[in-house]
Image 1 (tube, rainbow, N blue to C red):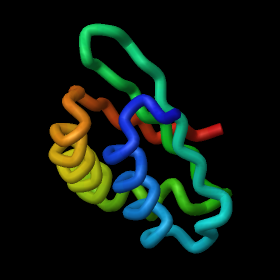
Image 2 (cartoon, one colour):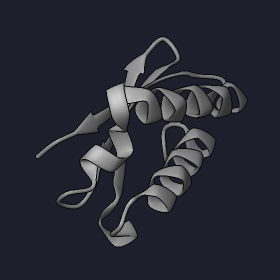
Image 3 (cartoon, helix red, strand yellow):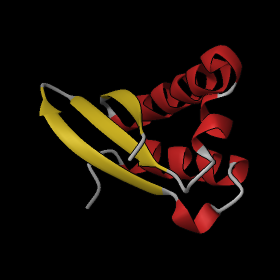
Length: 84
């Protein structure tokens, strides 16, 4: 079971709708204690720039939407976009 199922589903849906290769999207959740969750997002080659956007605006918007969804899960969420 996911740490924050609603927030994870929303994050996965939003990121998959932005990238060129939706099959490469991976979202992994980590419980950090005290109702805090870290969601790490990995995308395919060349898609990280799409997800982050100009001056990080897209990434900030994604974080805001996911934090709102996380309220339904009863947790506080941080979203990290990982570049492998």
